[in-house]
Length: 57
Image (tube, rainbow, N blue to C red; front, side, top):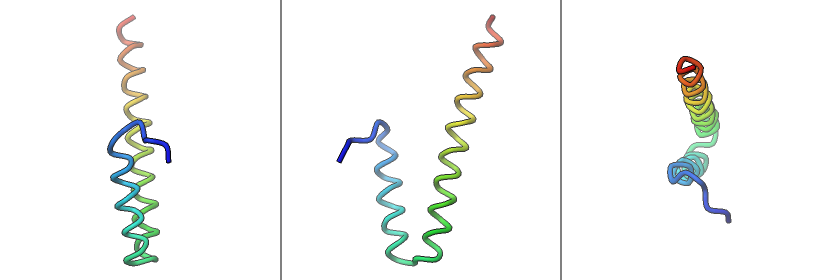
């Protein structure tokens, strides 16, 4: 296994796996939400930092 760049990723993967094992239907919904939130945060941070650099010019 490759070590994830961010330590939080392995935690989320473990939580997601346990969710899937405990309740499959609800776990799938939660997994989708987690990935969506993670993607949303990443996009917003990238957009925010790029906007900051544009303002500096």
